[in-house]
Length: 166
Image 1 (spheres, one colour):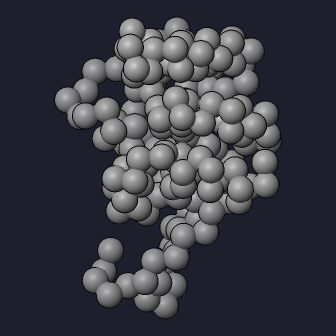
Image 2 (cartoon, helix red, strand yellow):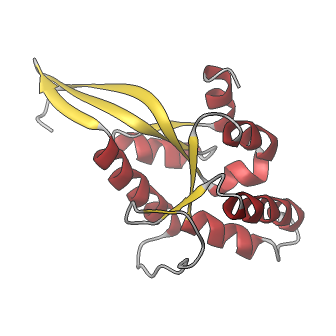
């Protein structure tokens, strides 16, 4: 980006990518999103984190409920999986990814690649205009700031549900 350019992001949601905290803190709202017309893509990293959290004393029960729901949704093909390279998978046949990146960066990388491949970017009169079809959902304010630095469409779950009138 050229210094001094304005950035305009137009969001036309088609794909919704939830972070781990969405499943743990807002499972009911996430279910509404899944039942809507949006295509929900669950990052493999999120699936791994939720699986690991099932053993936790604090979040174990929430994680187990979320994992059970995810497994049913994958089986019914109501959701798909997203790799850290931005590929969409319809089943859990391959779910192991190796990377030196931290989990948040792996999730963001998948969202960035998918956003860039499904969206549009152009420069018009000193304004860099992005059209995004992917919305990344997270309740983590630090991760939202990081996502904004990549010019991603990002919201917390409650704001998205309100804006989408779900």
